Image 1 (tube, helix red, strand yellow):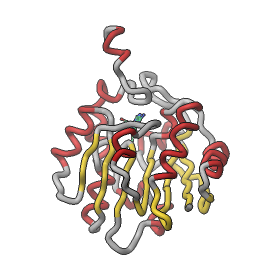
Image 2 (image 1 turned 30 degrees about the vertical axis):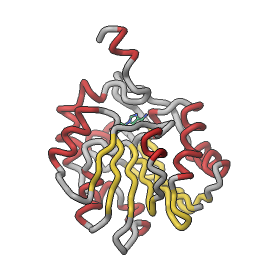
Image 3 (image 1 turned 60 degrees about the horizontal axis):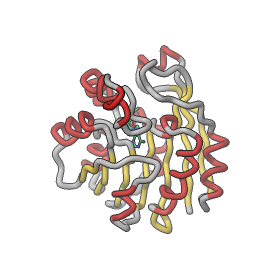
Image 4 (image 1 turned 60 degrees about the vertical axis):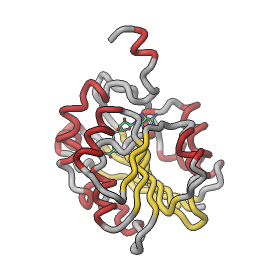
Length: 208
Ligand SMILES: C[S@@+](CC[C@H](N)C(=O)[O-])C[C@H]1O[C@@H](n2cnc3c(N)ncnc32)[C@H](O)[C@@H]1O
């Protein structure tokens, strides 16, 4: 890729456009209930507003929409977002091209959400970006809302921009942004290829 094109890549999304074709099948093959087994009890029973940040191919958004929730699915990588809207046409999902840490377009809507999901995205942000992002994320939560995060630990594809991010640092950032940690678990990977590679996850939840 030419240097001028590289300069336009949104920080954190490096490698995703190039790998989109293979990732689409992979992301769509993992069942929501298996992937999110540790946090299923935190999903609302009544139809609610959910914000999925870094929504990928929209598999999670589609499952939530099917359950009656309305989802704003934020995804900065164009080919993933295009695949997502084609694969999961739903009047209960809105797709938005926006990105952490500023979430400029999301914030400009002045909406709040019952659940904010950040699954396998936070490790793509550098420390200063995580520090900038957390107060923005916290401000998007409804008063009784929950932030539900999945932090990826372990080996990552060479063409991705990935940082070592701990549960402890994330909890501290969230507390600084006025959130209280209510869940902290360590789990295996639902994707067989990641499980074999030794990828582990921190599952975290926060309330206002
Ligand atoms: C490992 S995928 C996870 C996708 C989805 N959340 C899932 O669980 O299937 C990481 C996603 O984060 C997105 N991403 C990377 N950097 C981002 C940023 N700065 N802001 C928002 N999303 C970002 C990528 O485009 C990609 O869709």
